[in-house]
Length: 387
Image (cartoon, rainbow, N blue to C red):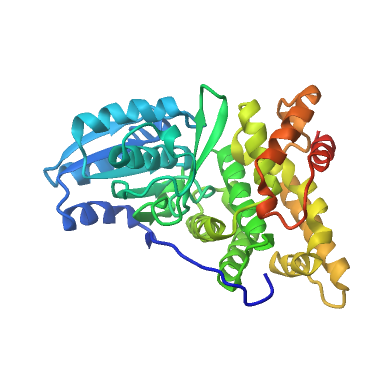
């Protein structure tokens, strides 16, 4: 966006961040006089030091606490149904979630269904509910999805074998986001890579979006700078507190923005691929990213030139086109340094399915946001190049 067209910027989440930020959870619960708490936890974190400390701090308040950890890596409507059984029995006043994007998305879905009724599939789409969800305190344990501050939750509909996006700019984000580098210090390396690239793609596509504005530009460019400087050292050593903290902040900044701007073809293709294959969302993004960057370049070379400088490339003396192409090179180098598989065939995609996936891509209508208009044939060409 280059003119003064009417736009917006909005993030209703209160963000608390820094080392030992997790200790704020008990304070928030006590301050609001909440006496019944449902804690949703990523199953891989159950029994971890942070989980034990969090449970102990809440129980010390004398509250009624129940837990749920039946969450799949790619969350499904069945996960939501199971969690709702626990929620209905407890009737919690607040939900607390400790986990990555999958756990946070399930918690957001439970918060919506708990106050609006029905099933989570009833709320697919944009602004499909108007009753405020239960309050939610989110402690992200991956630096990637930014689900704690984004207005979207993605849940797989197992009957249709399709990913549902439930979006609400005001009621979708968590009430509180707790960004603590300790929470992502034990993230497995492959998860750190996938989630870190996911965060980069959020900022990258939001910055290039047709709906980008000065507020989202500021957040996205700083997020890209932080990720470019910190993703490699964070992947190399997840206990690097400074790198972990910067990745958490970058992830949330990017997610605050894409709720306004939408994303683009990378996420579109990842959504379609994820509905066909059990590919982690961040990995699908990572494989598709360089190909989409090349495709979108001609739509907005000026922005690519700014991206290159933001990623630390010396573009002095270069034309806009030459500087912009440096951004594509920097993106490829980032993926190479992180050992991202270069081809879709390397992550289990079969060539025979590409026409079906390209059709799904076009029907998802990310042309609302992507800077270059993309036909179904264009998507097929992109998928074939990525294959």
